[in-house]
Image 1 (cartoon, helix red, strand yellow):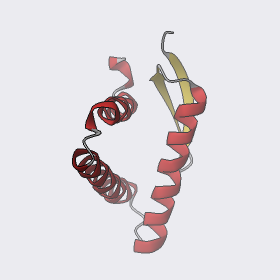
Image 2 (cartoon, helix red, strand yellow):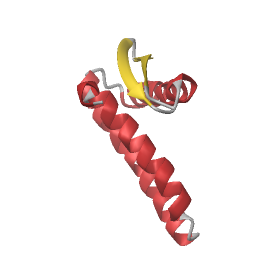
Image 3 (cartoon, one colour):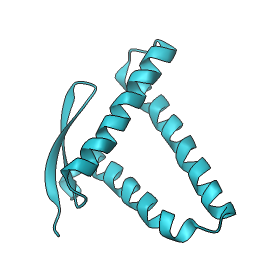
Length: 100
């Protein structure tokens, strides 16, 4: 299965992202990101898009660290690590779509 180019909308802006996981998966991820960014905007009153993106990234990174720590404690990092790596690569492809 090859990768496909999918258009997602985050905070009203469209992004074209190459993904091997299929459109449904990417749309769920983009939806989660959009909801998280909306929550950050609402809770902080921040309107600058870069500030919102950085605060959102900080919140999501915290979630990832907590998941990794739980996985390590449960000795389940092996299978979870591949999925986490896939999410990281997906985020990187959104930032640098020309590289994919």
